[in-house]
Image 1 (cartoon, one colour):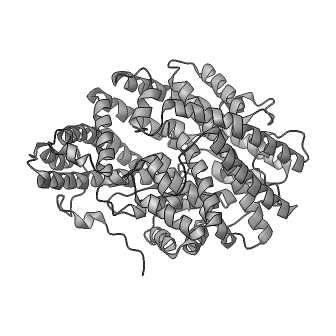
Image 2 (cartoon, rainbow, N blue to C red):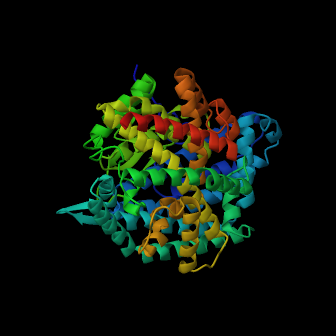
Image 3 (cartoon, rainbow, N blue to C red):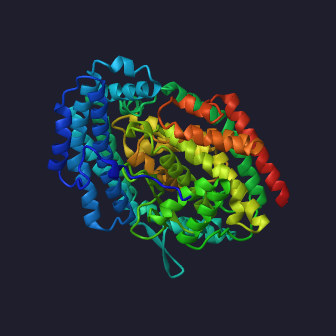
Length: 578
């Protein structure tokens, strides 16, 4: 039986089926009656919360559609303006009325009884925090910040290089880093880097503007800096700022030495004394770069097949996205960088956006975003949108674990056994090394936001020091100082979603733990994984991890255990190719 996702729009009771959010007046006409509605008993409260939920889903869906349109075509001014209208006109009113509704909820006499239920305790805790942080004077500032952040995608969407008579996006050109010809790699790397540096001043200026406004937002909310403010705004109740620094320390002491060892081995395999930046992505055990698919359609079809082999239900779920046209996978000019899965609150079927260029990395990215999509689909039936909006530590566990769970069936993309082993090695090496990059980015954000008013030169120096702290010094950046100093500018999260990054580190560790469990008991692991995802945000982060059969733990000992397991698995695969 095909997987079916009921649209919440068809079950509206408060909003008319014909209601489409196009103007501020339309929003006000449905939200202010909720602000004024009396709440006399439990029945009226629950009806009120359901009606409010309909409005929330409607607003989120409209914002999602316009964001998707704006990133799929950064050159279409009408689409950019349509998204800007949501940011600049709809969201300020929505934010103000949401605060009024929050206060109304917190004043409900039956609130203490509701809080005895775990899912309501989490929701109410989050609302109390949002109310504590809310400042009406921050609304126009947040609008400015969102509008500015959009420019990162526009700037990057313009970037391309000329290569052998073709115009390549930087995502397409990145495949050249896999080539065995070192001079070709260096030439391509320098072309891509030079193109990025052409816009380095624009990106520096954009970051300066964002930093200034975010710092002001924090001050107006009563915090000494944006780092402390954002930590609270993100609802990080299950760990502390100090835990982030402990994580940085664990990465530096445990993972950085392992990665330095792997870099030395990489250099030896490539007959080099030291690696250079253009040596870091070349496939070590293959004479030619892997080319697992030719276009987005093939990527989608093979991805659906893999999900189906893992579980027929999962294959049906991913196929729903394809059937509805919710997959935009190919890289092209005028398309924003990166990849994402964007939930559609009413429709229920999310949208996957990628910049695939035919590489093995694209396979892992589809598995990753597909994990997010499965998460969106299995939580769709939860009664409130707030129960579905999981913190990133849970959301990224869903996606990163799916990368590892699907590895068993990657032969769909790589029927040649040797190529399959090469792909599995490349994915595993990336997973083992990516945590140091995560720590670098997170530590850099902490530095930026705790040093307000710093100069561009000071920022670059801080970045360089942190880069060497976590990435080590085995890779040789001689004569490439500016390239290294501006390397942080490629990271979308710094511009668009500040402090959303350390979660990838926690989730990567969790994904390694789930993979280890899957190797021992596949069926039980899949069952536990899906049961954990179905919880949405009705349980705390440690409770969701426990439901998946793993620990939410970033101690030195636990990180070492998982890294050593991953390293041993890499050694097994490498031995088979020797």
